[in-house]
Image 1 (tube, rainbow, N blue to C red):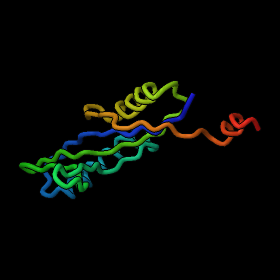
Image 2 (cartoon, rainbow, N blue to C red):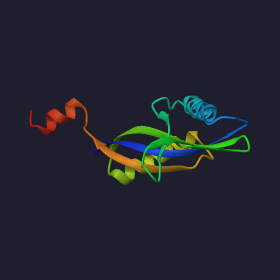
Image 3 (tube, helix red, strand yellow):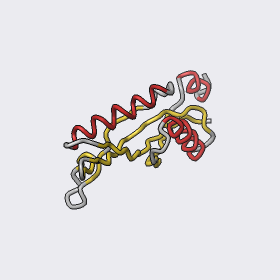
Image 4 (cartoon, rainbow, N blue to C red):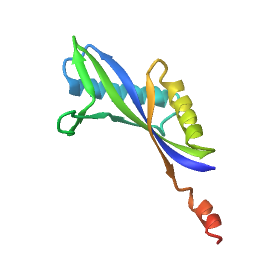
Amino acid sequence: MSNYEVAMEAAWLVRDVEETDDAIGVAVSEAGKRLNETDKQYVEVEPGVTGCPVCGEPFDAAFLAANTALVGLLLEIDIFNADSEEHAERIAKSEVGGALRDVPLEVIEVIETEGDEEDADVDAGE
């Protein structure tokens, strides 16, 4: 069994805002609040970024029209003792999706991480 870090992208709708910076702040705050209410403080929430299609320079993933914003959020969670990358994805989507109902989620990256030092000692034969 392995440990994984799973990164997901979420699309968060924010109403009654006039600037993208305000929308991003509200989205991060609301997502954090909903995760904390369900004891998921271990999920990291950050504003998402999108690459410029022309130059590739990253910019905030937020679109504002008619005082309503669609904000992309990056959510990261560590999954322990998963059987595979696919298993880690399912666990992550279940954990985060349960707290953020009605919020679209997409797994964008799964990285296998090293186990704790005790596991490393066993693997090294010590």
